[in-house]
Image 1 (cartoon, rainbow, N blue to C red):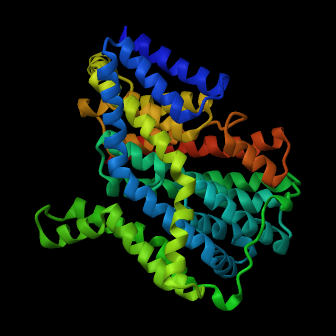
Image 2: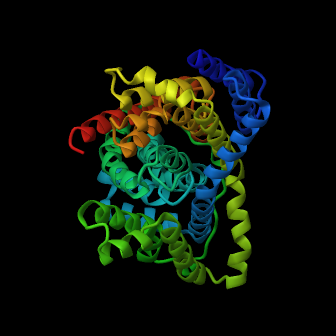
Image 3: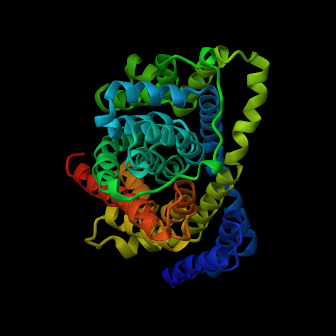
Length: 438
């Protein structure tokens, strides 16, 4: 019976979002309440579970996502992305422009949310294609693939950061394993697959974006731009290494864990951005502080969707559904990584939104952690990988890519959809390989 209620709940979520066009956050709250009532909880207890799930989820994530949004905004308005791209392209040359685009995508994509990063790299892609006379998709797909990988695999992006909390995983280790997976994934999906895009003759729609004009003397140096963008990654990476190789109670490990905490590392990066990138742009400290509110606005709905996922997860726990799932799957021979990927993939295909698919899948799969058969960090990555698969016409990312690159639907399916699916499948394979050695 509980399994039927979960299936009905997911079906109701599909109907609300796709059929009635109800906002994803509202849909998740309605479904959470319905699942709670269906599992025999009283209306009051269901509501308490929803409130508890929202509070516990946002309590740990609001700081991380808020600081991440501010850091991304500072990088975007300072011209740091353009500086990084130009330097890397000059260093690698036209023959290796795909690698330059991949590195740009990683450096820009890790601290910036996907939507912001996507819009930031468009002028870079178009300018590079025009300058080198290379096909736009050949130039652009590697950098877009890198953005997709950071969006689905790496904290502090919303979905992987939230799933870390759901599964009780170590955020720094998740980042470290995610980076290990990210390199081969983006090389295959962006560079190798990108070479097949040479024959697609696309003419980008340059009217859909505007280039921010920044005076040369106001642009940051390459070293400053890279230092600020990678500060959180380096600090969290050192903390992950300390977690693996140092005694837990050692002073050095405690120092690394404090400064490698995502909140502390992002806070340091924000101040580094203010006093380097911001100072270079000629704006006063108060002007930079005033801009923080604008940087945070775009993540408001993302936070609410994550909160809705937290509510759904908590109802499953409090209703006893989690225990039921554990008993149902305790003798299952299928790898939990494959199962988590499959659930997320089905939801992604049905719902379109990678964030909603990942959050819903994590709520359903969270009981697997209690079985202790799999690394929670790898389960985070498998869920994130599944949430990226087979993006098509019900995904806003599909339409953004199509319209900005001025493609037909068939061309978008052959490029964007295949690229996203390669990222997803290679990510799962990487998780399974890492599971053999971790």
